[in-house]
Length: 266
Image 1: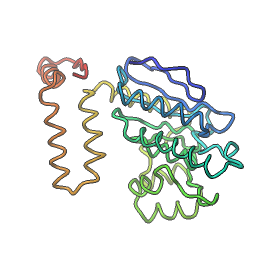
Image 2: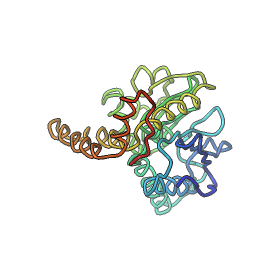
Image 3: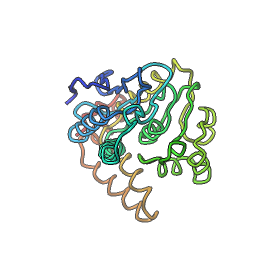
């Protein structure tokens, strides 16, 4: 499965045979997340979870060159009742958690500013490449709310509790260079380089054994929440699932025959 519906707020494009580029496509509104984008992204992530088909890696970016995602659409939220807000947020929660749990890896290509829910979306990806012009912030505290899409959990896990509490409690923006020094991002690049670098890395990942990549993602994510000895056992269980695969046989054969392996995900 590599054909997706025509979405209203996101654009999908297969870049090569195994890499899916997903673009948050509301540039007129800072690529902010409105209710429709919540539905669109949840549908896409559910489809990829149920059957990723040819998709072995996803690159998530924003339309334009200024803003990756400005967070929740505050114009849509202006005057919302408590019930409407709660229902919308429940949709957003499902969308974010489905992204976090996606079996295939997701690289965030942060082409511009990532604020509030936009930073939380980047944090929900496996790792991040960013433009050197991008700024980051979790501004919820300045709006009378708090991060509710993983920000208070994913940020401290990425950069440490003390630094995270400063960012969360002040709501102050920080630069791409600071994000790099904190260990939040994997690379800081010129704006025109970000997407290309993310796609290049995605191609490398997609060229590796897809079942191996999935098991690694699962082992890192769930093992990190376990006591170390239990996590070692979890890793071995993930490893043992790969021994009987065709791709394991192909990988060893290709090494001995001095050729590139042809992995099929089986």
